[in-house]
Image 1 (cartoon, one colour):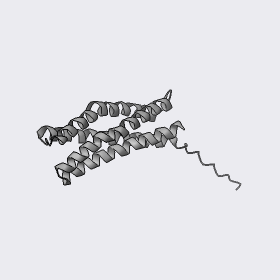
Image 2 (cartoon, one colour):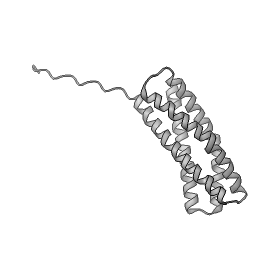
Image 3 (tube, helix red, strand yellow):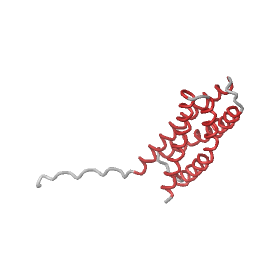
Image 4 (cartoon, helix red, strand yellow):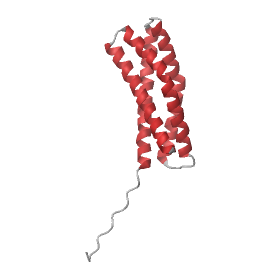
Length: 154
């Protein structure tokens, strides 16, 4: 059961970040200021989904990986440290800053700079979460059994 909760929470977190990133890029490239402001407010509201999903994925992953010495598990733990730091130090503060600037209609140089940083940090988290998902799926696969040797009598 814990494995399914972990997989669901991790997939939800990855999907949420992908939606945030795509909506931001599309609104910046093709939308007007109202669209950009709506996306920035949506990203901030979406933190109510993302933060619990990340917390559940992290806690369940830590519990599942406790005591494992598997290189894939160790890589996942290292990546999660970067993902968490990136989210706490860059992505959440950026979302708050950008939503407040967008609500005020202040699409100035500071907005553009923080938006660029947010897109890069988001892409990093998408990449790292994708790698964690890949390694998690690999951990679930059963190891291949060696094929039985053919006998000369058969």
